[in-house]
Image 1: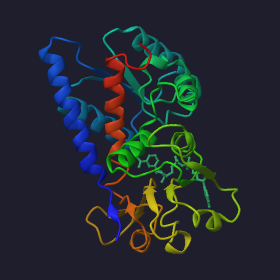
Image 2: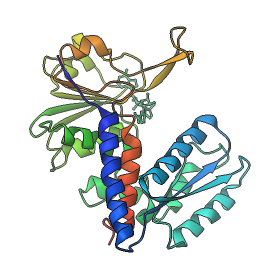
Image 3: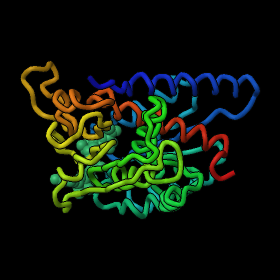
Length: 294
Ligand code: NAD
């Protein structure tokens, strides 16, 4: 039976480690890390995500600033706010919560963020540095997965890692990180996507499978070999009359049957999801200590 990778526990461990470091920075009279977040509009899910990021910052001793702007904010106004954050020495890092309202060009906004403060790791400069294996802010979900592999001492060197999904926020960066000369890393990587043929033939050869396509229970037991490591990134909300909330979360893996064959597996919820916040905090601490860009 597989070892269940407990992302909630690892995320809490990381938060506690950072809280201790912040306390020691405070005792030495050094700068306390300060994260800002911009939220445009009143999308319920985005408000919840940003709210929980700010709350966690406060819990571990960071300073946080939430800038809430109305949905009709113009692109120019948002770019002006970004310029102010770039120039504000007190702010170490910041995020612009996505998605943005349709009249704002997301790519333009991402490129306006000072790469030194881009703790989401979405700026092309950070993506390029990551690809070159230079110090960079890593995007939250892939960075979280790397932490899970590392903290569970999962051997990756020389293994065949199959990534399913090639999004800019998960699949593509994940394939780069698993292939690079680093630990975790040093895998032979196959990046698969919606146009891939014979996916099952490929997944059956995988030692590690990272699934991020957003299709509930897509990866089934007949697609994996014994002893595989499975990282399930998918989160899909499905209506359910069996839960109080009226919905249930599903991953991209048919959990019970795949867990019976796997050596390690992440559950949904409680696997990759809780790591996102830990990654953001780690990046903000790095920004405050000027670890990436000096
Ligand atoms: P996306 O929707 O941007 O991209 C999906 C990818 O899956 C595409 O690259 C597509 O080519 C590929 N794909 C689609 N059908 C396929 C098929 N039949 N075979 C192989 N590949 C196929 O995805 P995303 O933004 O990376 O999100 C993926 C899932 O991960 C979603 O459920 C999302 O909610 C979840 N997610 C979770 C976290 C987290 O913190 N746990 C973070 C980000 C995304």
